[in-house]
Amino acid sequence: MRPAPLLIALLAAWGLSGLALLYLGLPPAAWQGIGAAIALLAILDAWRLRARPTPQAIRQVPDALALGVWREVSLAFESPARAQRVDVYDLHPGGWPMQGLPRRLSLAAGSVTGFDYRLCPVERGDAVFEGVQLRLHSPLRLWRQSRVAGTPQRVRVYPNFAPLTRFALFSAEQASRLVGAHLRRRRGEGTDFNQMREYRVGDSLRQIDWKATARSRKLISREYQDEKNQQLVMMIDTGRRMLAREDALGHFDHVLNASLVVSYLALRQGDAVGLFASGGDARWVAPQRGMGAVDTLLRASYDLQPRAVATDYLAAATELSLRQRRRALVMLVTNVRDEDIEDLLAAVRLLQKRHLVCVASLREQSLDRALEDEVRDLPGAIRAGAVARYLEQRAAAHEALRSHRVMVLDVGSDELPAALVERYLAFKRDGLL
Image (cartoon, rainbow, N blue to C red):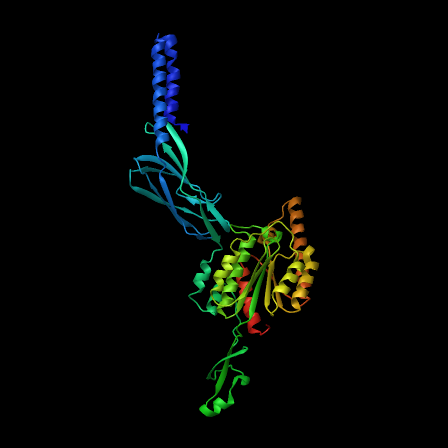
């Protein structure tokens, strides 16, 4: 409980009135009587404030929130005994941007008063709303008291899965184009028979079914589709390489979002998708088929966080080889550095004994911008030279991987979803799995 501005002003005025004792001849008893009256009012007002019951607070917020998406939170209050005025501030997770707080309310006795405010989660994982902080005012406005109402509430912050719900309205091929993947259209080729149809200009002679042609007396072609029931494993790095941040989302959040996009499209294609995280936080989800696997992947990955530790690629590849026996397309998403190349090459060779491996190397876009800046002084020249040398060593590490027949994608965070989807569909259409 703290004195309100009115009480402070009264005490200041009473203190200044003491000058009247010296210059105006005010009787000391009168001055003391004024002080005693103020003290009595303050004590009575403090007692009445302390006796007031805490208003009941109810918060309504979804149990699952999406990263970087503004959501509304509803707060409702009920004053059981008498009308009162309160200042409200919700104890939401710290660091989240919000709009509409604090708020001052006048609560009527026995009625419910509420309002909405908006907030934006900025970090995935588990978060806690501790309670609702209330500042109550005494009847005479001489005191203010801070209390916490309501109960703590735990929520889960998932990656932004809104793009996945948007893809549900389109076919797998249309959804692939939405993320920017450039697909090679190959008519009539694939690994699984789909249907018979009339011959079209451009079909190869190998597609013609001569028996069906003889029966119908017109050219009939076999149409094939990409083989289904194959397996995709997203192998994501949760080590120190993923701690970089260039915009509202960190590199790891971009990696997780892109992995969910390609996983969703693979499930739409009839394949099974698994997840293997290693480096910092570790996680394993065995490949599963069906669109219900999207929920499994979201629940398994929403709280993954990169840690300031070095990723042991060889140990990760060994563990994955023991867990994943069936041949699969393994998409390793990391940030390749030249000092990691020996360990990474050993890990890729181990995985290649059974699996098809693709390495997606996330590039810091700030480095590209640094090379585009005009050099005007010696520090700028040194910085540009260091960046150019780093990119040269990075390119050499990528070439070392390509020399071992490893597909390497060197892309920025914005290009990552399209690049992964395009490469996955290319592997499917080429029948490499």
